[in-house]
Length: 318
Image 1: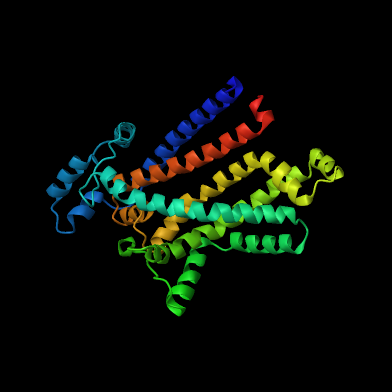
Image 2: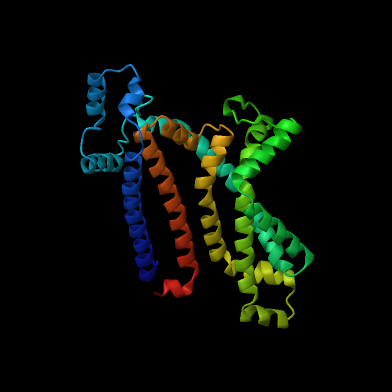
């Protein structure tokens, strides 16, 4: 690997770590400002002041905010995420129980959305200005404009309420066959794919069109190369970098979309765990889940930037 590329990668890694540190400060400040007393909420309305004070001391809530932040940050760095105030269990254990379900949902969504988006983007670029391109542009623009929670509600009304083909809630414990897997994941995955496919398809189309408008493609056409060969053999390999960048940026949307989808479909993932923790004012669990989502988001952004660096000779030479 060339040293300029290595320096750029190290610079991006340092930038991501600094961003994550600032995000941790923001998350801690926001969660500290949440109304209510966690100790009172856990003990209930009949708790005595002495019991509340004792629990506040046990949870460290009586310490100054800067000291609590440093203690929490040190726990994050050493892997000690604290104890859930509502469940009286280690936060790491609770997240470990839910994380595989969220990762599986994200993996299935990625496996479905990326091929569809790439095929749509390539077809749209190949037939630019024709009916197929116009139709795909209209469809993808409409899919981007519709919010994901509305897509989820419409799918539930159609397939669960009217047709009765699919369950409205996603109970993963009922999965015993491939058909069960399809029934449980069909609507959550379709909801997430709706916007993801549209975004990736549009950015893939733009990346390919930029290559098709390049001078070397004009030379290829003058030599008699057909339109399909121009796209698949000449333009597509050169557009892999921008397309990979677009895919990584689009997949970062999964972080926000999963929160909405898991809540609406009652899917047992980390996002629904965080929503329940917010309702219970379970601060250690809220903080850990928020940091986890931010870390995944920064990881995807970092991968997108690295793809852009590795695919762009101008950036590599800086």
